[in-house]
Image (cartoon, rainbow, N blue to C red; front, side, top):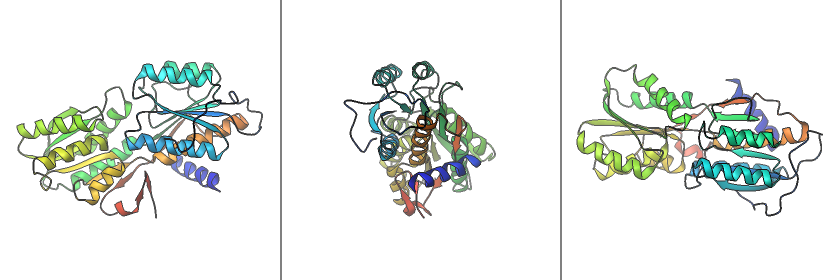
Length: 326
């Protein structure tokens, strides 16, 4: 039943950390598409689990794989392309059946994904795409443009008089950083009453965001809003704004749908976030890996996009970990 529900959810979406043990002695190699039983190792590689989004990805992928009878190994590349390459080499040497990967760079990850594919191990990319097609078995991502535009619309409507604002952007090497920033701009540019006072990268980092916003607020005393490319940076901005005694004067929005951001929304310190369906995307990747291992095909296109959901004060109480209940 669970697998059927996931499949239905995946099909609907396209129409528009690990709980368990690692594999000390993994079994099985890459699937041969003979329709046999599932089994063997699925390797799950994401950025640092210090970010709850990436931990939720790993947990969901691990649980789904184990439910389907696979052994699992989970590791973090910490956004280091060299470490990512080493981890993919390890997955190859351990005869992984498939790799679930939230990658460490749209360009830097092409070579390692190609290496896995050449070794007969399909790679299912989640959350972040690479700048190449025809190598990964699937690239399943949240619709960052749709989600960021929806967040920006919520944010501008909360500031009917407009004013000066700060944008915090993510890592330049991450395709999502540019996509989200462009989507923010596509909405905000329609409102001439808004003026971007500063645009700074905080590299997805909370402490860096805190420091930069703290400094920017000292040189800009008329900021009315901050919009951030992820919740980690938004929470850094929340802390800096709170330290400056400006919580009631500056409206902050983020992106990802992290638990801490949702709590900040409930506490009245943040306006909104765009929730990426990390759990669903991870489950979809594992379901498709299982299908490819067992049957030789996924039944899906390589590029797949799943819409995001705006979380605000109206629906925050229905939020669970990167999911929205009834």
